[in-house]
Length: 115
Image (cartoon, rainbow, N blue to C red; front, side, top):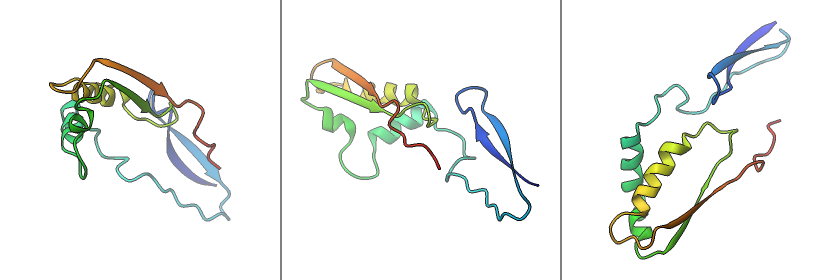
């Protein structure tokens, strides 16, 4: 049997799971780019939001607005939503960014099953 270890339970212990396949199968273990890289620190997240690769900064987009809604992904993706949301809220409530009303929307159950 061929054995492949894959990430599992990214929000609960960050375990690996071993999958087995018949020897006659051709199996490639493809991972996401950057899977083995360390995550960004909260300061690095804030810097990326303040200076995007292209387009205006979030603070500039929020300037003069009275409301904001933040949409974040569901638990099937290991996004550090707390760090990202904190940086977004800081950028949207800075000087000249209008009111303080904001909301959030989780998109639970919208990720199609992997096949």
